[in-house]
Structures are given as structure tokens and as C-alpha cells.
Length: 633
Picture 1 (spheres, one colour):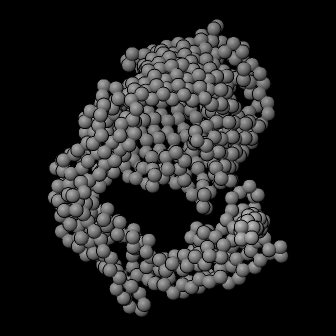
Picture 2: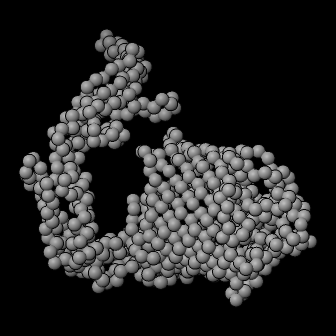
Picture 3: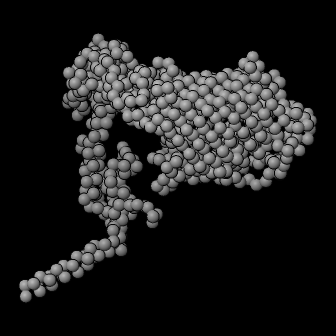
């Protein structure tokens, strides 16, 4: 009997548990239909929404969303109160004013009332402990993140503490500490005493490398920018860490100080580089598609530790409709203690454009150097660098047969440096170039804030072992500006000119063209330039283009852009006629994938080019679709 009762009870439990679980699963989750803040004057709704975890449910059925949770809401009210206290409102009160459920019980609307109260102001800020220190510390210390008359803010206090510590660590005080004492002021204000405790002046000690196997110690010594006996500077530690991390021969690298010496506050601070070497050989194979170069493939092989000193030997090959060829290269990192690197490349490449073909055989020798220490900005960094290059390439180029028919005039062919019968040209480009770049970006790959400046100067002449003669000046500025939350604006301006006494000494393949996936997107590749008498784009010697994009999130890893492009190319050097500028507008999608940003843009010509011929055919239609990898700029 007892056994029968036990079996019956087990059966009832077995039936009841799934039933209860099913009932729990069938119970609908309550959405948050709206989240409204009332009484907030200092901080807008966007700031407060980033503080709380309760979120308004997305209107899209496929989007992830959190159901309403009373415990989470209660915690959010406490978070908001703590946030206001940290931001200088000690008497702030936060409460749930209203919670209204929908008729079907599936959603709820929340209204949160905030009484900010009077802010706690800073009456004065007094700095102590910096007497006798260099002016490089005492002068900047007067520009603290928090000042008299401002709200007493915990983030500002932390920033002040970090600011003073950073100044001291730049002049030999790695053990520096800063205490901030808050004292009652008059009329309910607060007085701050910022007390710096520098500790002993310290110099770098011996440098030790741990983890080296196939690599020589000279690799570490070249990358590290300080030496034993140098005054300690935190920026040199950061710069050295970055230089070491840039060496592809390392899979992992970390530059740390000696723990025992730090705890003892020793006057000499030994440093240790801990590394894990990467596999010596690296292969990369890539396949992609774009509307301009169609199916493309790339291959690259690298020896990351050639000669055992961190230099690299490489072989690369590319194949696409527009560009194909192969080449060899050698890269020697940190040729100079100050940061110079040497690279040499040689190869043979074939370019196939809609109007012409060109072949180049030769190479380039470059020396790159970082100018200044640079300054870190979030994940990015700011700083200047320069690259000097010697180029020597044999060029052979020709206008395609169908394009040659559109160059009916013999004078036109001669003026372009082409054989008047065959439409061909050849020669050797030998020249010196200087590229100077300034970068100040928060994120190098997909910046939201910052700017870049690039200047290119080139001199090509026979005395450098060539046959062509011309000079080039080119500059480009890019800027990135946040607008609201994840919405941002990106802008670009680029200009350049090819100067020569005789235009026939400029290779046809070096002339300027615009249009395509990355410039004035309402046109196809190389469709904007001066044209022959029959409408064929023949390139020019001066270009000017500008572009601006509004970038915004759409959903998850997808984003969108709307853009306005403008630009033109003129026939002569230093010649600009703004009446000839072409404009295009459009929009596109961006997908952040594992291989980078995949983009699709549709551009519309606002002022079409009349009588444009490409590949022997009249070009019609004002819309262009572009598929590519990476942002347009």
C-alpha cells in the first residue's frame, strides 16, 4: 500500500512540474512601453538612460529587450540617486511617480520624478606639496579639472587626482600619490585641499626580457625608448609598450615595473618586458567582391623574424579586375632609437582601368619616423609621423582601343603624352616623396572623434635616374564629430596638383580622376575628369573633392549613412573653376563584420556630366551602386 502511494505521488509530481513550468512559460513578459524622466534640469534624458538598466522595449519584433522587473527598477532609483550625489547634488531625491499598465497587461509606462535640489559648489581649491618641483608640473597644475565655482563632482575629483599624479609621473615620481580633503566652506559650499605626495625621485633601472626564444634581445632594446639611468617618465613606458606591441613577431607583450622595488619605493625602478613570440611564418589569404574590382583575391606570406632581429621578409600577390600583380618586400622595425623604420618593396603590377591600362615594374625604398612621443586618446593615439620615399618604376601605359577612337584628335593624344598612332607611352618614374601625417583619433579603425591631416610632396626628375619630370602637392583633412549618442558626422576635404613645365612629361597613368566607391559616389570609377572632344575622361592635373557623412546606428551590427559628395578635376596645374564641381547625394548601409566594415552605397548625381563616354559607349543614368569593404573615408 505504501509503495502504491509513493508511486502515485511521484506520478503526480511528474505531471505537476511540467504543468507549472508550462504555465510559467506561458505567462507573458511585460514590456516597458515608455520611460520618462521629470524634473531633470542638469542632465538630459539620454544621460540618465545610460545610468539605469531598465530599458524601453524596442519596437522591432526581432530586437532583444529586457522585460520589466520591479527589483531592477528599485535598484535603478538608487543608482540615479547615487549618480546625482556623485555629480554634486547631495540633497537629490528620486522616486517613481507613476507606473501605468496597458489594458492587456502586456506593457507598462514608467514616469520617474527627480528633485535635484541645490548643487554643492566648490568655494576654493588649494594645492599643496608641489613646492620646489619643475615648472612643467607647477604651471599645468593650476589648470585642474575641478575649479572654484563648479559643482563638487566625484568624477571631476578623480580626474583631478589622476591629472596631478600623471604630471608627477612625467618628471620622475612614479610613486606619487594625491589625496583630496574636503572641508566645509562658507554659505554651504565646500573647500578642497589637493595634497600631492610625490615620493622619492626615481630613475629607470635595469631592463630584463622574459620569454625570448628565437628573437634576439636587440629587438627589445630597439623598441624601448628609455635606458637605465634615465629619469622615470610614464609616457616613455606607454610609448615603449606601444612600440613593442606593434612588432608582429610578438603574440603577447607587457612592460611592467619590478614589484619589490615599487613597494620599497626604490630610487631605481627595474623594468621587465614579458613576451610570447608569435609563430615565425604567417600566411594570409583573402577573397572579396566590390562593384569596381569585382571578385578579388589577395595572398601574403611573411617571415616575422628574418635574421632573428624582428625584421620581416614578405611576398604578396593580388588579383582583381582593376589590379593584379606580385611583389617582395623587406621591413626593418625601429632602425633608429628614435623610432625610424626601413622598408623596401619591389614588384610588377598591372592596372586595368576603364579608359587605359598600365604596367609598372620596379620598387620603392622608404624610411618612416615617428615625430614626437604621441599622446594616447582612448584606444587611439595622437601624433605626427613622416615617411621619405625613393621610387623607381618602369611604366608602360596605353589607352584602350575603344577609348582611343574617342581620342580622334592627334593633338589631344600628343598633349596627353601618348603616341598619336598607337595611344601608348612608356618611361621611368624616379622621384623622391615626403609624406607627413598627423593623427588624433579616439579609435583608429572606426573613429567617432578626432581628425587627421596628410600632406604629400613629390619631385620626379631625370636626375634621379628617370625620364619623366613633374612635381606633386597633395593634402587631405578628415574630421569626425559626435552629434548625439552614437550618431556622428564624418567629413573629408582633399586637393592636389601635378605641376610640370610640359604636360607630356607626366605619365597618363599618374593623372587625376574622381568618381567611384570612395569619391563622388554618384559616378562610376574614374568618370569625373576633363574630357576629350568626344566626351572621354582623360584625366587632369588638379583635383579638389569634399565629402560629408552622417553615420548612425540602425540595429545591432548594422548602421546607416546619408552623404553629400562634391568634387572635380581640372586640366591644368593650380587651376580651379568651382562652376565645374560635380555633386552627388545618397545613402548606404554599413555592417560591422568579422572582416571589417562591409558597405553598400547608392549615389545620385545632382548635376550630371553631359556627353560622357566610357569604353566607347555613352554613359547614361544618374544612380550608382557601390559595394566595398571599409568606410569611404
